[in-house]
Image: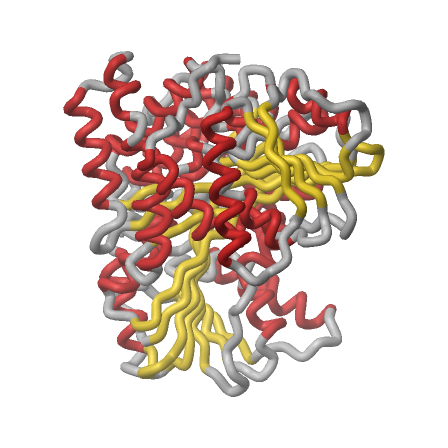
Length: 273
Length: 273
């Protein structure tokens, strides 16, 4: 697995993940329900954007949040601890641990459930990671996974510069071993890993002139900002010229202004071990 | 307006519209509710695929179904009449009339509601048609519109031959004056026509190995068959070579076999006069 995390670790990235989490939280966590007393693995928690919601919604559970990167985990832990102190709500018992999805530091059948959000998209070996997750889950344990698909973008004005930009960012993610179009593959990869009762449902994030909240929080503060973070990497690899990059970003901004529209499809899967 | 209807009039097309209507019926008609006593305009009813559902769901209404093509209307009328005789249900009072959306043969404010499904995609002058529809609606009357967007396709296996095929079919539709990507433009065109309380929601038709009903009825019997009907026109205009066409169709078939997946986004709008 590549040591580079394609979305980067800047303060800008942490803020973007926050915006994304808040506008998408209902999409991501809809139907995610683990029984009281469950021991849940959050695989690839990153800076904790979803961890906060998991601990809030599962106060009677034990949560183990893992990530490959200690610096991400430190942010996640700080974020969840401070949130817990601020709120009067009961929270799940949560622990953070550095771990590699290719070789989980847990025994077989230690978990009652697993949650993954925007994780499989970054993995060069999705099959191996899912096999590891399956190994540490008890028979009948439930897995929830949520991923995007960069190939699903529709924009108005329908400027080709947008699709060129998105394809370049997806191309960079491919070079790093990931797959920015993993959403459409969720069903196949879960079935091939041997999970049962696999169900996948699409969810569209859509913004237009009469949905200003989606424009601000999704099209601008999530998608456009996510693209912006890839600028240096994409230009350094000559996947786009500086002019093409600029045209793409301006076209994306147009899709969030005036009569512009923007849509992006996420895929949410659930499956049983 | 071009005299050619891009989807053709064959028996195959009538069957395709039937399959499409049955699997998509819940998507298309969800939230479509006109009060008892309403006089409803179905603009561009074609061969009546949606008319059947409209008359079934609005037994206390009067429905005027119009289309430019007398041969389509004849099929629609026969279909709705025979359905009404078979069923014990009460049906709306329905009349069929040849009419041009650019110049509706009705006075101002004659209708309490309007319904359009897969119509705007074919119109060279969407603004003019919406202006006409607005003219014949009473103030406060509700309009429902449902359209697809060919730019939203995602497929697994992610074979470029599929997108080349879909782009060629969309290109042919553009040559005929239509827009196969009208879905993303629904909000802008309704706002610019002066409708109020415009809301647009995306709906994804998605099929995978564990959704065989969507595979059969949507990916194969709706989408793939719709592409197949365009073969002669696309090849005659050299928008694709015969080999490219064949590769595209085979790739589409793969997306509905084994671990394949397929998704397509529709957009449903409602608005007030």
